[in-house]
Image 1 (cartoon, rainbow, N blue to C red):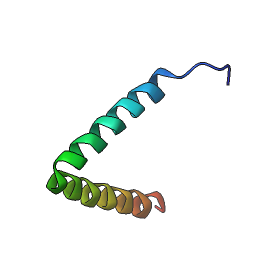
Image 2: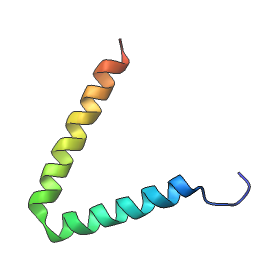
Image 3: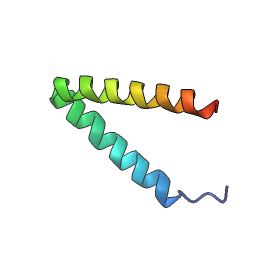
Length: 50
C-alpha cells in the first residue's frame, strides 16, 4: 500500500454508509437487505464448491 485510498474503497464506504442509514431509518428495508445478503452469500458459497 502506498498510503492512498483506492477509489473502489471510497465507493464501497459511501454505499455502505448510505445503506446503513436507510436501513436504520426504514427497518423493513433493513430486514429485506439482511435476508438478500444472506441468500446471496449462501448461493456464492454453494456455487464456489463446483
